[in-house]
Length: 131
Length: 131
DNA sequence: TTGGTAGTATTACCGCGGTAGTTTAATGTG
DNA sequence: CACATTAAACTACCGCGGTAATACTACCAA
Image (cartoon, helix red, strand yellow):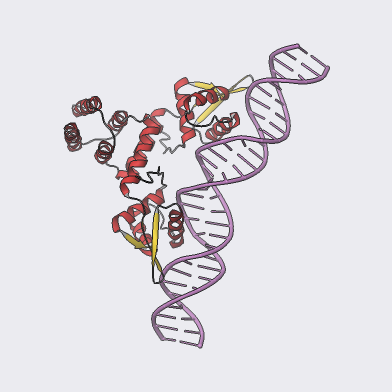
């Protein structure tokens, strides 16, 4: 695995990545559009904000683009899996010294958990047991 | 609960908080000392780096200090619980749209989990079931 | 052909985490 | 008392996420 880097994305960057992961590839306008519908509770971003961020993200090899006529079509350059895992691992390391059990324990104790969610968790663990 | 803010601490800040949570209160020199033994793999920080960061953290009400003779004695101004929960929740929200089950699922699938850890997880869920 | 429009490029600014050098002030020591 | 040590104050700088205005340019339509 060539570049299993450590990712630590900001809010906007992560939201942009999620859009790209979902739609595959999109123009700046399309990303901007998507963000507008997704970012509830926040002011609509300026078009150039999204464009600028995409360019910065390309510098850091998070996305790449091809050109179609005048438009840039962006797509993710790193898989969701890699980013999600990296960020999750990072937090587990930082907060719980790498202990998964401590992490889950904390989550269970501090969050509302419905019974059906508990069932699902239980099943996941069973499954994992007979790896 | 008056100020249940959202915390997003950087590496150094979190490490400093951990020291303070552990020892209760400490002078700059003591924090610096502790960090030196804790931060493996990293160059020893300058004394002033720690002092500066502590001052910045006090501005943001993460720590406070009292004076003893010439020295500043710092202590945490926010409980570990609040910070840990806030940061964990933040990640669950950002990466997994708030779903605890999705979070745990991801963690289980991407990390090494020993059998004793699985047992512990299982017990935790059982316990949580009879709330 | 010319003016609007759609896009990109350029530039700028703020806040903050992180890192540290330099300066100043107090205190201890020979 | 003079000098060294200790500690805080001040200043500075970098990178980066986030945000956006402005400038430039190609293209389309009346």
